[in-house]
Amino acid sequence: MTYSIGNIRDEFPILNRKVHNSELIYFDNAATTQTPLSVVKAMDEVYSCYNSNIHRGVHHLSNISTQKFEESRRDIAKFINADKEHELIFTRGTTESINLVASSFGDAFLKEGDEVIISEMEHHSNIVPWQMLRARKGITLRVIPLLDDGTLDMDIFSSLINERTRFISVTHVSNVTGIVNPVEDIVKEARKYSIPVLIDGAQAVQHIKVDVKKLDCDFYVFSGHKLYGPTGIGLLYGKEELLDKMPPWQGGGEMIKSVSFEKTLYNELPYKFEAGTPNYVGAIGLKAAVDFIENIGVDNISLHETDLLNYGRERLQHEIQGLLFYGTGGDATSVISFLIKDLHPFDVGTLLDKMGVALRTGHHCAQPFMDRYNIPGTIRISFGVYNTHSEIDKFIGLLKRVEKLLK
Image 1 (cartoon, rainbow, N blue to C red):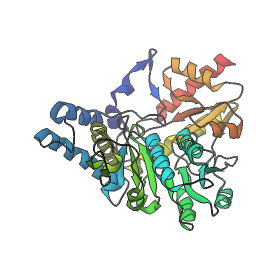
Image 2 (cartoon, rainbow, N blue to C red):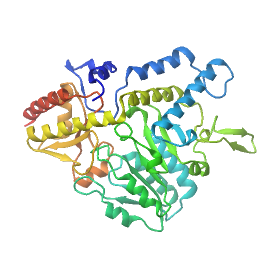
Image 3 (cartoon, helix red, strand yellow):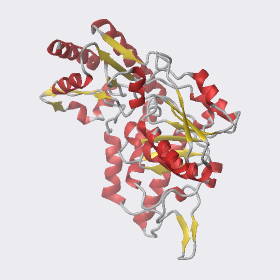
Image 4 (cartoon, rainbow, N blue to C red):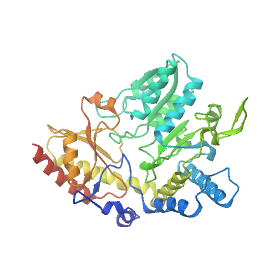
């Protein structure tokens, strides 16, 4: 390992605080990662030194703010290996990015009877926008089912594609299990039929190297707050030829070239999809988060988190009786979802919170997944670059205490 966990943890003062008089163990990274000081400082510098609205000003502060904002777009484009900076649209996050595509692309190019393929493991943010489109346009949703081990049934996927298939939208990594989907194979299959593909990367970009050029996907979306960045900022990557054809999603300032009461001419990419004052402070903070990740190295992060994943699974399996894992097939990132026989996940999570452990229980905004396995939810622990073996050891000790209290 080419970096020091101690030095990394120093970047996150929140990890030293106490919760209910206990040392914090933060295992809720799949929901939101903590924010390093370098990101906080970058955003503080905006407000302290050059805060000003971007693009439309001619004064010095506006020019600096605009430059920093567009530098952020450029560097984040490099981070995911996008060919062109203007193929990156700043949004509020993954949810808004998917809604933008479902609304803009869907309303323009899909009609009654057309079919969209999603999967049984999707987060609600990659289900509901397509259901809303179905209500507006009369499209049909086809669902890739899950196998017992939590992986996608790729044989069924291939059979779902037909002459009516017009779009595919799937997650790169499951937010429930951490399973990494074979998105490359999905895109290759879609290419045979010229079907556009959107990949939800909310749980991927902070764990594994993402190369949109290599993936050859048409759209890729992710959120800042899950990769050590600020909340309220995210990205939509889209291929230029598709973004050019899509109508604007929202109207207002910045997304126009000219406006009269008779006619409005829309702006070029990426501004056509960035109506109003963008979250330029968040964008600059997101660039700082990308710098933080790249300074450590995505490969180093992946190795560290895989080590935590394997260590955590092994210890849980051997030391907690009646434990059942969900999502045991294929490659996975740093998420462990499980249940303990006769214990409700909410009760377990509530007691662990009183002992300083932050984790997630419930359906994780993936109710169809829970319905597939006929369970109320799971206990989910998810690791970040700052987590350690000693935290896992302490967590398992606390989990044993909870088990005794509830049985």
